[in-house]
Image (tube, rainbow, N blue to C red; front, side, top):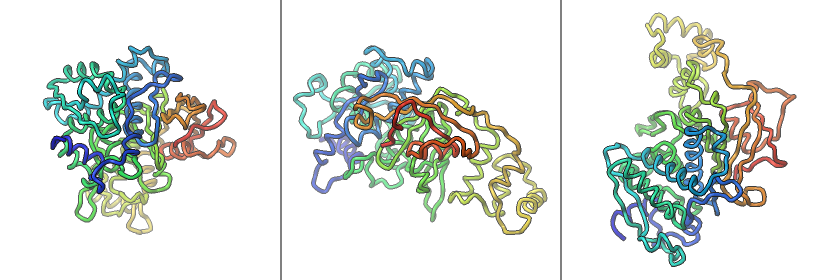
Length: 421
């Protein structure tokens, strides 16, 4: 194995003490990008593990089609030629996002030509990829399209992942990951890390989901620095293990990857009002929360001036002191988020409609009815307050979505709610 290939394998799988990737784990990841027969625009996942690549690709594929033709087209059955075009366009888009500088080269990991066309002679041992270098975006798109058979065959998912890593640069990824000794794929359970998910969604392999960077004991903890095209919500936030920032919670398109403890699925809708530009109050909430990294709902009054400056509010010392007295009349030394927003950004009505059609995608065959991967359709109700007259079952999907819309209710057209796992 070449030194470069070894570095890629070590970054993805770690350095196994037994000297190799466990065969059962590698076999679970050994699949291509395959479209469902039941839902010809939905990608299938055969076993647990590769959702960390398949779900971001599926979400970006939906975004790409939505951007080009609208949601109705996302839900249409695709011809094989349309599948080829949309998948390759999606893979190219993710590779372009991973390239730090568009003047740099793109790199594709491919198998020797004989093995891309005949997967029957490929064993479960790790194949030796070849690296193909492209100098321009046009060359990249043309090459990705020409390799469609590679992407849909046995090692397509892994070869694409390796291509993203080579294009991004191994050292660049190590510099962004919080713990560079942590592999992108868990060597025991086979789950993708948050760094891997972030790399495919944002182009940056940071380990956290909050907005911006934070300091902790003199160490910089990297987060998300700009609005993502597709979003990310996680059940872990409902359990208070983390808090997703606005850049992932409020993406450019109404498509969210949903994370459970062990799996990724996708929630999407055509309701663009859900991703309208950030309102002044939403911006204020986001900025305030960057000064409240522990999500206490308040900041020390000594930080009020910094928050007001960051929001371009009047921040003269006398005025800041006046606001301190008004917002903290009891002299507790803290400024509450709610009172801050009410003072500076009162009476801002939401533009979100009360109800809208929604869809859920889970690529894992066994998580779908009759093991046929297809979209589950439903209606979301976002009332803005708790209404005892409108109460639906408490499900993991609902709890995940409540981290963005606290009073959301979901009515699905199927007898059972879609699975987050």
